[in-house]
Image 1 (tube, rainbow, N blue to C red):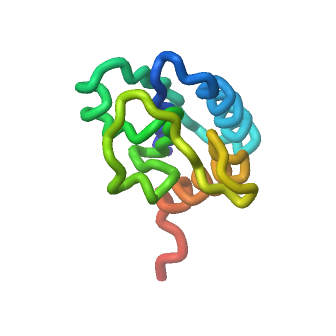
Image 2: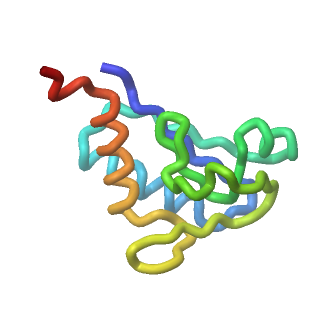
Amino acid sequence: MNKTQIQILYFPDCPIYKELEKLVREVIRELSINADLELINIQTKEDAEKYHFTGSPGLRINGKDIDPLTENAQVVLKSCKIYRTEEGMKMIPTKKMIREALKKEEMEGKECCKI
């Protein structure tokens, strides 16, 4: 079974990326997902361009941002990211959003239901 690759992208002064890391680790444990979690510190313009950094903290699962609206977003160096959640605008995704994104990615990686 392949490991799920999870990345948290942040800039050094981001006040909230550790909270996102804590939530992600909780969801990984709750779902018993085989995952690697990588923290990526975006320090330069080159880093921002390399990772298509669209704000801090960013969350990607197997290379895909959990916020599909960021696909065409402008690359930034130091900017906070805003997530649209069922609770309104937040600086990090909700636990429910993280859980759903991980479950979706897990299902996409499996070949089920073939006749």
